[in-house]
Amino acid sequence: MSRKFLGNSYDRNLKTSYKILDPIKRIRSSSAYGHDIWNAYEFTYLDKKNLPVLKVLEITIPADSKFIVESKSLKIYLNSFYDKTFIKNSDVLNHIKKDLDKLTKSLTKVRFLNKFLDTPASIDLNSSNLLNTPKNKIICFTGFRSICPVTSQPDFANIYIKSSEPIETKWITEYLKSYKEKGDFHEQCVESIYQDIDSRYNPKKIEVCGRFMRRGGIDINPIRSSTKLSAFKNFRFFNQ
Image (tube, rainbow, N blue to C red; front, side, top):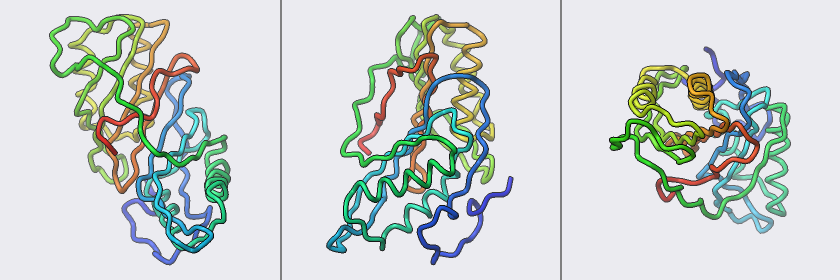
């Protein structure tokens, strides 16, 4: 799998441009509702006085977008704003949104984030002695590991699941552990988890949320749900 920047050197003099962004065709294994929340912790630009502004940027890409964006290209793109002047916050946000809408072929959302929401209460699968998970309760598997399909480097996450049907604890634990050598992007991992639970248990309602650890100053957090309204928002299990 060849990418513009991931695993490659690049011209550090690149200017802010839509062409920096590297699209990846989205692969869907389910028809779930949802979106991917990207948090960029190291975003800076110049205000109307040419003074640097440092912000945490939240980008939301719908799950049915035609394309996703390769994370290193997004980092390079966002880093190129450091010497660009914007009169208003809305100007820089609209600039980014316009480029991401064009790349993903969808309507993205972009905003500055002041704080993360609290982590929802959950049952810890790693220490649970339950034979089956309770209905409509959030369960959490910590230490989830998958492999980047381009660099073969590991990615880590906490996986949160809420199902209207009980799930066998041993099965779901072993299933999530099986990803530790699989090469998939974050979005595809969560898509597959959602689809496999849905196929096995056929719940009326199910939600899966992957809260991945940041890499290169950006984390990617896919959420998939059987309904348009999700219980999972932009929370963190560490303070930033």
